Image (cartoon, rainbow, N blue to C red; front, side):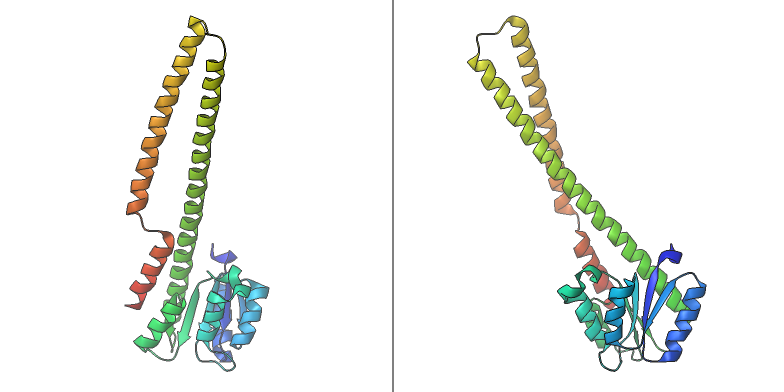
Length: 224
């Protein structure tokens, strides 16, 4: 998994950038570098990272400003969900909460401990991958529900057309009538089963937490 992950390192301190480039490259990550916020935004488009590691205090554009653009600007919509780990020389809770509210996934306070940094990188990437899988599952379930509704509507339409044709025709024989009645019974059973499944689905939905809400709850938990 890690060999395929692309990490963008953004820091105006060259020694930090080179250090992370060396260490993360040795671990199989693909690394790209940027020296300031404006360059970081260009690199995001070119490199399309799986994770951005971003210093907060930088010339030209701060880490918070970069985060705001990535999370809100329509020009960067396709990278809106890319996770961000922010470097900070400050260990101020208020600043961290503000960062989490902007969309930062985690914080690392300078000076760095590389073992901790690596653990946080892996944790953020793993959480992001799980959330992405849940979002895809939600979309797949929603499509399946739409298909079921369309299928039920189609079966009902065919049934109505079939019954109206039978009513318009001459009185059918006993065998045909028995077949029609059998179809009607099976259709009624199908409707009952689908109705029960739809009700069960509604109950489950009323109790579940949407992925977006879960993501927000996780951010709150990090910030507390």
